[in-house]
Structures are given as structure tokens and as C-alpha cells.
Amino acid sequence: MGVTKEQVEASLTSKLKPIHLEVIDISGGCGASYEVEIVSEQFEGKRLLERHRMVNAALEEEMKEIHALSIKKAQTPQQWKPSQDPATQTKDA
Image (cartoon, rainbow, N blue to C red; front, side, top):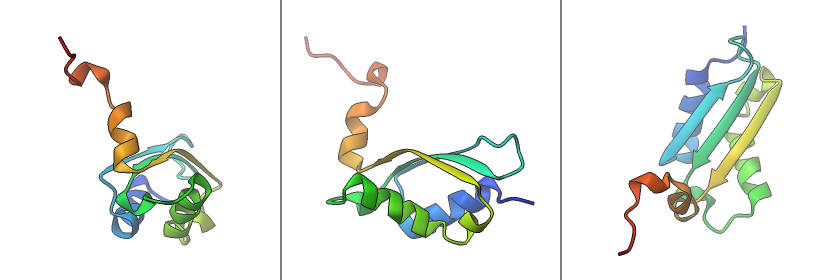
């Protein structure tokens, strides 16, 4: 049996304290492949490669059973805010 979505979320939450986290099981339910979008203050001052390494390190135990991890976004809170849904933002008159 693979890793559950909840296990991935719990590990990332406890280690990286994200303000936004989305984990999607793209393996069809077997827990072998995940897609992750994460926003954390711990990414401040880090290059993208360093952020990806931090995510992989946070999932060290889970990665023993996960065959594929796609990190769609690994952003700081400031990078994430501008990319939020423009429909929720007000326009200048």
C-alpha cells in the first residue's frame, strides 16, 4: 500500500508550516504519485531548487513509497498573493 494524501499533508504541514497546501493523488488512488502546491514563509530567500529540496526532505519517509512527486508550486506568501484568483481582487476605478 502506498502513502495516503493525509500522510503527505501531515508531514508537509508539520515540517514546513504552509499557509496554503494542496496535495492531489494523481496515481488513481494507490498513493504512488502526488502533485503538490505549497506556500510557506520558510521558502523566503531560497531558490526554487532549494525549496524543492526542502519539500523532498520533509517527505523523506514518504518518498520511500512514492514513485512520483510533482511540485507544481513552491512559493513564498508574497509570490502566492499576486497569483490568487483575480476575481476576488478589487479593481482600481
